[in-house]
Length: 125
Image (cartoon, rainbow, N blue to C red; front, side, top):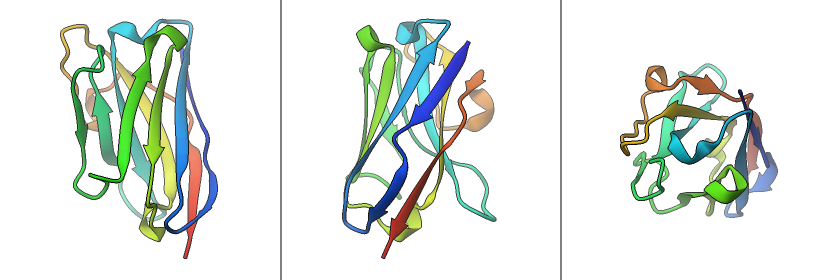
């Protein structure tokens, strides 16, 4: 069971970036997915999550209106579109999964079962 986050990089403030979270060893269609980020010296922050069907999604106030989470269960991948990025979005971004076929999801880190390695996003001003 593995999750792999990718798509990070260096982007200018105001620009866009799309992160991907790909699963291997299991199918994501029964799993809720959360995106988290951790900046240096700060605690891990839950920024968005999506239910197993994709019918429900939640966003932290800090990213609402700028970030969009979506999923393609046929590709076993969840995406995070980041628009209008700000320097304060600079962090390592992680995706996490929890078996949740009933549609429950969460932005609480301890709720999740599986974690991928992070991908660094750096926003220059």
